[in-house]
Length: 433
Image (cartoon, rainbow, N blue to C red; front, side, top):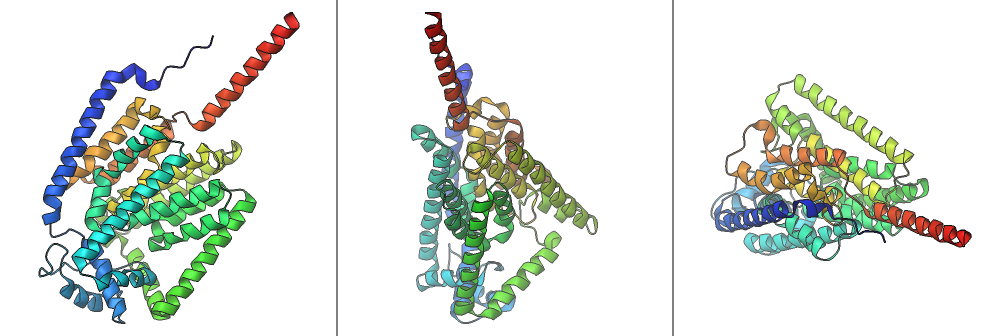
């Protein structure tokens, strides 16, 4: 009689219980602190205020990429907390069509619009996590645990606080992968074209995704992506004019040229050294990081091709996770709220039954996820290199590269081996009689 395998968690159950209690206490304290303090901070919804002001500017027929025109609008908008308190100038760099969509929010007061926006972003984040849990075959209580683990951690709370739109990108990426699993590559390409909202975050990862698709699926995916992008461009030209499209492109070029002078607070590893090291060495370091990422992806894709990894198995999800986490770690101008995209990679180290928690490096990653953002925001960051925008993706990338929990592919392989063993035993018994 075959003995039932022992769960990896069984050997450290007391420790697991203790860590669960500690994690729960940290979450409760963090949420209580945020609910008590953040609503009174003048920076509440500061990024949403910039989107709101851009919508007002476009609605008035002006140019949101012109700092003078946008500044005049922001001077009259005020903050989410107090409309009478002038907001600090916050530039706008998203597509003109996004500003046109945000113009719909300007028909209601900013504080009410922020509440609706916050509800929409939270719903999109939870919806994307549900899709991701399904992709990794996480079911029942384990799926709920994963959702609570990430949706209530400080990183999404920071995203809610600023009013960032990154959950839209996470939902688009998760939805695209789900459609690829259902053999709908054209629709997957259409959905992921939402990446134009922040093109520097997802398009390199999309290139890696195309690299693990079969030729037929890749063609249909690319056709959907290009076709949808053209439609979005024409819609933007029709609703906002070609002038704003060109102004947006010019704004992106200005941001690229001034990377080392305009990094956000608590940026990625590249953002840190670009702010500290002066030119020309900052540019050299940036180029080295980009070449290093390309080399890493070349090796990952080469191994994926050799081992038959596709988007339809868990190995494909792991490739996407490695590409996404390493890119968020190295690429310049990563906003702290952009780390909600890490929700796509967490299940790759946790495993469908959370068996990954038996690995020390995975526990270190979860610990950093729960504590590092709050410590940074409270002023306890030890130095430039260990802000949570660096430490969390760094630990997660190390866990992805060194630890692989059991997946559904492993379960299927074991079931196949067990079936062959049973067949062999039956045939041996038959011949022996």
